[in-house]
Amino acid sequence: MKIIQTSCVSCGYEKAEIRKFTKNFGTGANLIIIENVPMIYCPNCNITYMTSETMQEIDQIRQNKNQIALRPIPVAKLA
Image 1: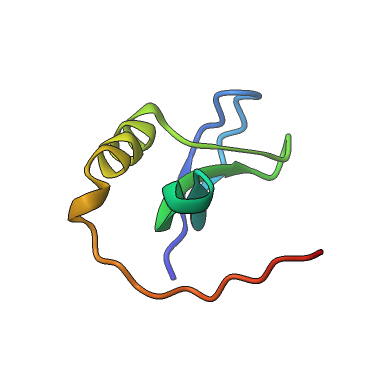
Image 2 (image 1 turned 45 degrees about the horizontal axis):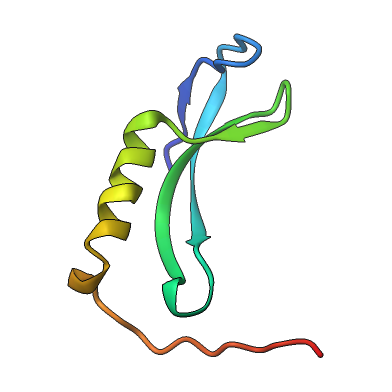
């Protein structure tokens, strides 16, 4: 796996890494799980954040949620 590096916007560390995560947005019937979300992780200041482009793409997915593929997901709830 190739690690892509960039500069951290928080501390300026030049070897921050772009990593992909699975993130969930919303709750209940409005829950959307998005896989392979690129996020920047800085090992120097221990911060993880998304770029504005990624946030815009997620907003587009959320606005068009009726067009995404649905999969059954088991959900457990603690009492």
